[in-house]
Image (cartoon, rainbow, N blue to C red; front, side, top):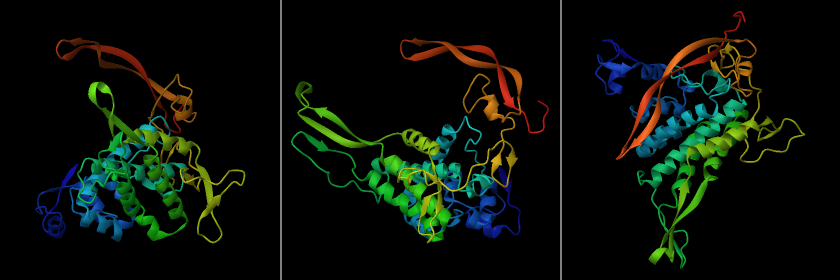
Length: 363
């Protein structure tokens, strides 16, 4: 959506964007630039796509802005990583009441839900940190980043040699720690300590799935020499891991001197560095409530035959559901034709779609 910047009175803002004052400017960008900076987050870089300079990316602190200005190539990777982790978050929770919904009209991206130190907030902080490490490491490994040079081989012996870049994950982790953690390190309160822990958990989730891959060389497949390198797994592996950590997240409370946190329930063990932690219970997300950041489940599609979180009973919170019959077109009877195409027919099917009733609607 775009809006027209009217003259006069908008020349300063338009000029700062490198835009003629009477040409169109994205409405989202105007909202972000005119919004209170404290509400904004670097997460919005995925929506902005870095089409503006670092001075105009809303919500960046001094250290983050410094890194942005000095590493434009890395910030492009961060923007890609932001889009990737948002998609991953929505994949992991697509069948849940809270489905990682975002709003680019809200400077917090997740609304007030992210202001709570809940399980959902813990997952968002972890997967966002993981997404940055993953994207920057990939860009480094492809040779796209000036500051991330491939170091000397870690080790070589008579039967194998290292190839590729050994430092890509190490560099990405250092950059993510400096950039992503900057806001929490500046605030130094109880919630910041929890966010820092979950940020670190996300970084570790990426490093967990770095494997050594090798390729054989030699006459007649003798494998007299192997070339090996570090392979970064897809972000989905880290997402699946963090999703399991979300299920087993540990509730914590700040200790007396404020230097750390302790387990809220003494019957549970102290969380490890890979665990997710939170301090506030989650709302049930059944009805829309802006104060707790719940969008509700009115109109959400549910699965009548499921017994899981996507079932109509669970998704609709006992409110019942509406059913409508729809006709869909899909490809069918696909056949491979030599060479080299797959040809399909278009088939129609009629299915029942179930959607949750609104609160107060007659069941």
